[in-house]
Length: 443
Ligand SMILES: Nc1ncnc2c1ncn2[C@@H]1O[C@H](COP(=O)(O)OP(=O)(O)O)[C@@H](O)[C@H]1O
Ligand SMILES: [Mg+2]
Image (tube, rainbow, N blue to C red; front, side):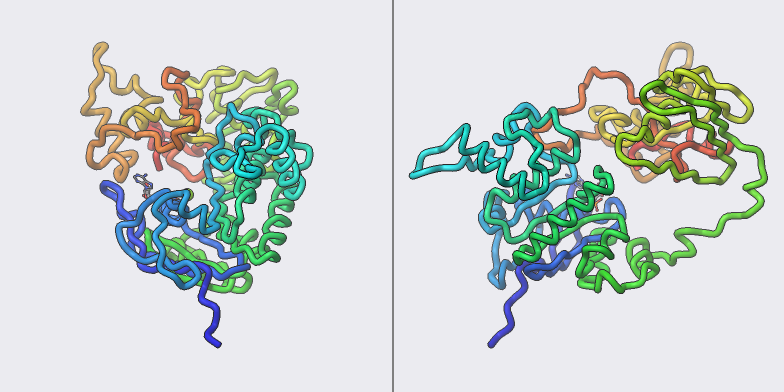
């Protein structure tokens, strides 16, 4: 008897956007009942590939087979009919609608051809939420009132409200605390035990070891490895495939003497009543300090307070011996601090402004000449800070969000902060600070 064909075979998939070849002949093969992990650095093409799989993008070339049969995924509906469901990185829920309405959006439950609203939709939603370990979510509540983790569960309930054979999860653990990740993995285990295939995108290697069966690695729009064993492929091999470099290059050894030098950033007794207790912190040149804690434990609040975007109730922040004015972003930026906030689109980018303006926005005074803006100098500085993003002048960073999603307010406040050009959250030396004055939020 001929062996069963793979559930999904994507071969030589190509997809270009203006100026970018996002997918350059990608192959992906997924078996029923497996957890297939998709790995790759930012911009490798993971989200584009799964949007092709979800019928949201049409590929320019290549072939897709579903259980051995050539197929065209011409629309999200066509993918859904085959049993392909996607939990997007940026959830596509309608915040003003209730949980039950979101779960059944576009396919309200019917009895004898009549749409059943209200109670039946709520009851079937409640059953799905219970299966997902979240019986506490009220199907009648507006989705906008739920936490990020709960919204993800709603998105998953919506996926499971169809007959699903393959479920794609794009970085599902990013917004979850460890208990919620455990629950997610239990759900993944239940699904695969029922023969459902899961395509799982994550940056976290430990997760891939825990739940993955096989791994496909994308780099610059190509699959550089397909179907590697998830549990046993050495980390150094995976890092080398993802980055094209060896581990020693990606994580170079640090000079030891740096630990002895004076801190560039000193935090003493920094407090915000009700958010976080007094905090002391010293950061030396070249150092990366990890700030660990559960969702809601105050990590972002601490960073935003150090950066001056929140006013502390007590305590002080010192940069290279200079005490910063509390609650002043201007003072922090002047002293050479940069912040790469959690939600870049909402907190760090002006989505309708050009790349150049986004890069220069937190240091505009540098380009002011007698009340006029020196656009040439502005563009030059932006190009120097972010050569790839600014190279050909482009009109704007247009939002790519789902049309039903709420857009960031156009007339809202200026961004809370911008990224430093360093790998850590706060720039850590005068040199790093001066090169990061023009922030590179778009990287
Ligand atoms: N809708 C789009 N328009 C223009 N460029 C895009 C679009 N979607 C993705 N890209 C570009 O395609 C490349 C791959 O992006 P993406 O698939 O989002 O990568 P990943 O999910 O691996 O981070 C990137 O260079 C990205 O900027
Ligand atoms: Mg992505």
